[in-house]
Amino acid sequence: MNVDAVLSEPIIARFWDKVEPMFDDRGCWEWRGRGNQSGYGQLFVGYDGIASRPVLAHRASWRINVGPIPNGLCVLHRCDNPPCVNPGHLFLGTRLVNNRDMIAKGRFVNHLSLKTACPRGHAYDRVSKSGSRLCTICKLDQQRIKRAAERLKK
Image (cartoon, rainbow, N blue to C red; front, side, top):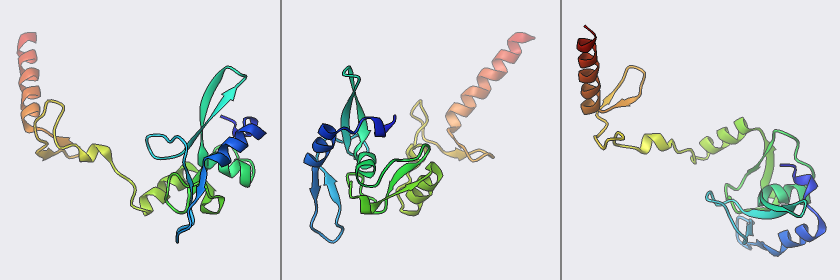
């Protein structure tokens, strides 16, 4: 989505209505409007008078306060505070830079590693040569089914 095309004066005014500067040590400008599931602010913008789509508030802040966002770049947070829209806390980077920044700040969570049971509810109790986790019960069931199918072919 091209943010440059949608930031008209009324939208910019709506943006500033939802920004609250925090007077603490961090100095973040908190987004007080609607947010997404990850905590990033969203500003809804209409297109051609028909539909409304979300624009991330920190991207809108960059565009309003700094300038255009080159294609393929993300707007990242130095402060590691998703609702912050303070342009002094934002910087541009690629997705790779964003992922490395996330890992360096300890925010990376491998959601698959949090699962402790297989889809059938058995505990993962083995690790394969490739490093994937296995459930002994399901593995044995798979082997029985495979042997039975081979016997039927004979």
